[in-house]
Image 1 (cartoon, one colour):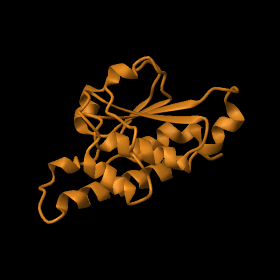
Image 2 (cartoon, rainbow, N blue to C red):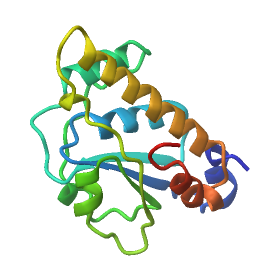
Image 3 (cartoon, rainbow, N blue to C red):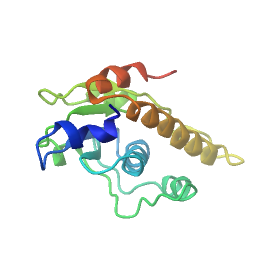
Length: 166
């Protein structure tokens, strides 16, 4: 049964699945992932984004590349892990090596890593950085779509198979 239908058939009324996208500063990778997840899922599945530390604001190129596909990041702000620490997550996906290394452990929350290059580390010459943001968006979208095509029972297993390089 696809994940997007799981909440309707197996959860108690009013309960939802919770997913955390965790990056270093919650300004690029995790807000993009959260917005893509929100676009692809319905009620009953809530995505959060947070960083090991909170940056100042979601990067303007993240806003730009998401607007290219009709998704707004308006209203998203960087959050630090302490803001979401009390939430019980069904899955935590780390999106950077630093987040993976420093990831707090939530009791009962499976954690997998989808490691992505930080597009801010790409030299800002001749549109290279903008293209890196686009690649990030497209790669995240591909992995999210693949994850959503599986059942929740297989979600953690599938997420781990969608690790870096796959």
